Length: 83
Length: 270
Image (cartoon, rainbow over the protein chains, first blue to last red):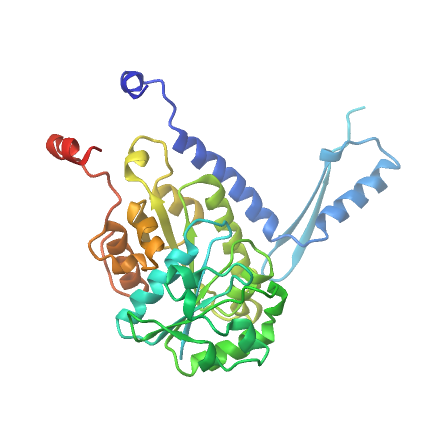
């Protein structure tokens, strides 16, 4: 096997795959780390209220908290479906 | 003022206890009064790695609960006389580690010792949190492997939010990266994350790289801390890591594949 691998350039560099996957997941998890515990529940409840009036799917409401030096901003981003 | 250093990783089996044994032995060998505490209540193993398992009479939990004095529980190392071991309890649960109890024992140790090394259990639950809570510095052990790197990042988050220093708004816990089980040959083949990759992802200063080595199993079989195997590459790598931890500048070694000559390949069969 190793004899054949020696001549083939097609072998993938799995270390690079690992690095790319880690960079993505670690960045994602770091983003969530700074957010308060209640955020997922808040997102679900907001979704339920909006659904009373508009039919939207789960991924159409984004809730994020951004901290600046003096205050924190709750950012709510709702994408409404096209008519 | 005693320095409190936690050896932690999140993931199990990456070398926390092996490292705790070697780092504490290395610091003590340089003449500093050092104690190493096993926080893995219920699954104690530091005593085995340091070859004092038959000398355990009282443990950390006995001291916390006032059933024994610190002097009764501390085990003096037979090889390095400035080193003591405080074993974990094998029979109680981790909940016996109360924050107040741990604090009291650490404060008492700080009166006699220069360095207090806390060997953390795996995971991010109560035992691991107690091990890191009082730390001034943290050695994060990482294997060049996806799950270990991710868990290390998770434990860094906990150090930055749930340690005493974080809760009290003091200077943050000083973080050190120690990569263990490193195989430069596989890194060169593109099969293993490189130290540079890991440093880039975790973004903390590198304290050392311990090469994957047969000596680690051989020395744990006998209860000898790897650092005392001064002829071996892993032992020397641990010695370098201790020197850097204590502020010395040392160039990194054992990070590139050794080219073996044709003749030595034949005779070593490798």
